[in-house]
Image 1 (cartoon, rainbow, N blue to C red):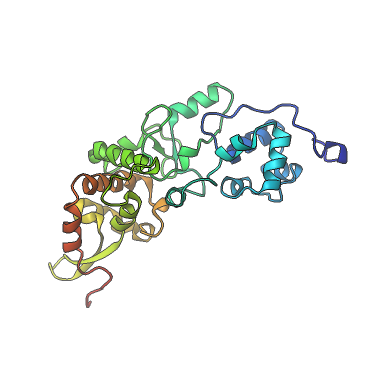
Image 2 (image 1 turned 135 degrees about the horizontal axis):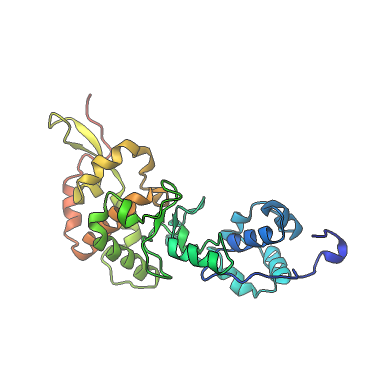
Length: 278
C-alpha cells in the first residue's frame, strides 16, 4: 500500500463484500488482513484520525464517513447502518463495547466457507440476544469457552428457563421496534432486576446477605451470582456474563406477562441498599 499524495483519494482496488449485519470495524479489519497490514496501519492509511477501528462503531464523523465512502466505494448511509451511532439511547447501553462476548457458530462457519472468516455481525454485541437473528441458532459464550462448540442453551446454568428467555428476547426486540404496549419499559426492567438487595436470609435466618431483585423471581440466581457479585451491576447490563443472560431475560418475560410479579419483588427487597449489623 502506497502512502503518497497521488494515493490519498484513490479507492481500494479490491473491496470486500460485507456479511449480513456486519460491524464497520469488522469489515475494515478484514480489509486490513486482506492487504496484509495491521488495523492501526490501515486506519492511518485511510486518514481516519484514529488508530482504533472499534471507535468508529460508535463515533463516526463526517470527514471519516466521506473518506470511507470514497476509499471503499460504499454509500454513506450503508456505512452508517454498519455502526451503532444511530441506535436509540436504550439499545446503545445494551451494546457490548469490548470483544464480542457471543458468537453464532453456524454463521461463523458459513462466513469462513464464503471467504469472510472472522467477520463480526452487529448482533454479536447486543446484550439482549441469546439466539442469532440470522439463522435462529442459540449463541455461544466466547469469553468462558472461546473454542467450545456448545451453545448457551447447553452451558448456561439457567438453561431450564430457555423458553422464557426466548420470550424475553422477543419482548426486547419488540420494544426496540416501537411496541409501546408494555406496562413497564423492558430496558428499565432489566436494570431494576439487577439491583443489588439485602434480605434477612443468612445462614441463621436473620443476617442480611447480598442478593438481587431477580433472585426474588429466580431464587437460584442469587446463589450463582454471589461468587462474581462485582460483575452483576444494574448500571451496566451489557457487562453481565452471558451465561446469566437467560435468567435476566426470563425475569423480564415473567414480569411483562404478569405485572403483579413486580409487587412481590418490591415486598421481598425492602432492605434494598441497607446492610445489617455483622
